[in-house]
View 1 (cartoon, rainbow, N blue to C red):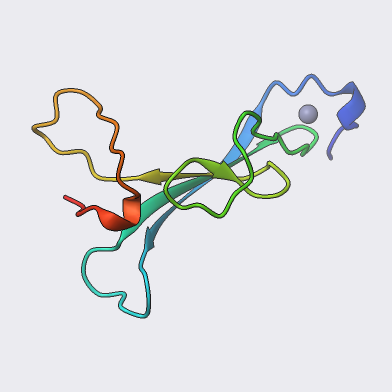
View 2 (tube, rainbow, N blue to C red):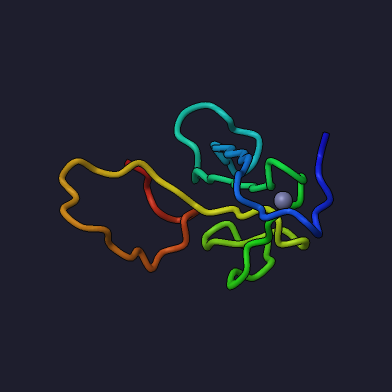
Length: 100
Ligand SMILES: [Zn+2]
């Protein structure tokens, strides 16, 4: 039984993470054009959804974004090269770079 969200301390959480391989066009064989991870968080006690703020709603796959409700965070991701010593900022859109 869920408790009333107004009296809930929101102290425990459920989360869903989805990782996707994204392709342009109909070619879904081989390496994808980009990968993405999607995250949702809800209070385990009352079910209230948490919203991601500071990230704008968008359809741009090359930057972190939320859906219109702010309840789904979607972030482009990629495999990290073993030789990479430190994170780098790639100015190229994800759809135009070669994935490792
Ligand atoms: Zn709660």
